[in-house]
Image (cartoon, rainbow, N blue to C red):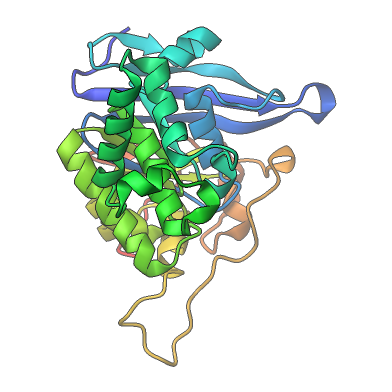
Length: 333
């Protein structure tokens, strides 16, 4: 298998299904994107667009009802070896999670075990992927808590999750994700439950740690403001498919898909006049079991034409800028 040297992750034609027989639905439809080493790719879209399912497929954590129907997930580790994640068994994934792939989940309170201390939960990764002594593990855990800027790290390591604030629990999740220095960190909406001040601190922290550790980040969010701050590249998802992909500045300055335009025009802005209202996207994401023919966004799109009922695929509209629309909207949002 071939992959450019600078590419750490290549997703090719990923299709994921849930259920079997008449009740089966396809949650991801031919999802493809690449992530370069040391960069941040943001997966963006409304709830139900397939972002989290993509991350679970990459981590080998799909629920029993879900399965990869087709596609390749090529991952290049720090040793240069390329692995198709779809071919890994459970033991292979256990070896890879931690030093290769790591994930920060959306809600830390439901991801942390209330019966174990913070230090025990972070240090468990070192038990699985290292041969450090108990003293060395404890020292490493405290160093990691200090790295994510938790005050009184030694005392916090002995605390239980309920004794920490929401912001501190999220920092613990970041520490847990980084304890083995992963090549690729997947962050699934890590700031959703936090207030804006703590959110800004967490985002700044992740940017700093990425620079210091040289890791790649797949950042999953529905917040275009977070995208502008965090991402180098963006893939916009809708109804289980990528509908636009570009560099972050190109995407904001030359939006080419009506759905992306809708996401951008619904963001509150400081320069918005007091008497001017935000423009929401009408309707909601369609049920995966009843997708409209052709473009899935057409029923909500003000630009829709009869031709939109035809099959549409992701095509390059300009250098490095892909869009799944029969039209080419190249203006600013």
